[in-house]
Length: 118
Length: 113
Image (cartoon, rainbow over all chains, first blue to last red; front, top):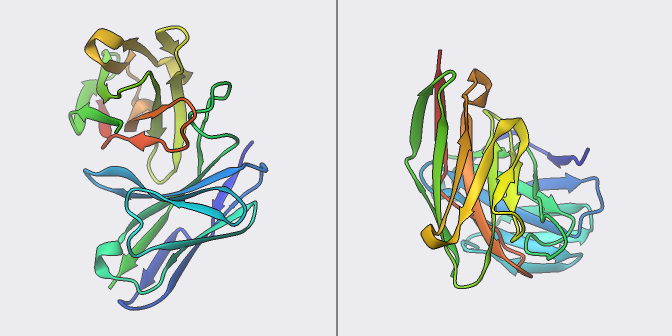
């Protein structure tokens, strides 16, 4: 089974702190994604990466950065946390992009990291 | 731009009743459509997908969805609800060759005994 592991299930940080959310996948997937989940808003894509050291902005990248130094690891960084970044953060990976003709493009998700910024 | 709209943030059914969760999509090109489920305190997992083959798609746990181009819909159904179906369901859309998956706002399914 594919396993996507997020390092912290629950974090509490203070405004202005630098926050690292770590995600590791064990299936040699090319693509990795960071989503933010908020009630009534669904999942919104923050950043994604389709290769090591490659990254692309999603729909809400402001206030976030990412790092992918190794294929299995994709980190989300909040340089200076703010209260409006209190949310559930979900990491996902896929073997090939969701729109690939011959692949399901299935995303495998971690269990999420619930971040509270005070 | 592609998008999906899920009608109803909450749907309540009795155990044994029909489950119908609605999803309408917007796409200028043939879409790929997905349903994901999220059980409490877990990440999302794939229920089923449509990628331009059969319009009636069967998924796990007895769920199925029908792609209707004329109605731009991809509603999720299950003939008989079970207590274990209580979860949040997300519809999602992408297109061929595209890397991003766009999710709807989700529908929470409540199942009562």
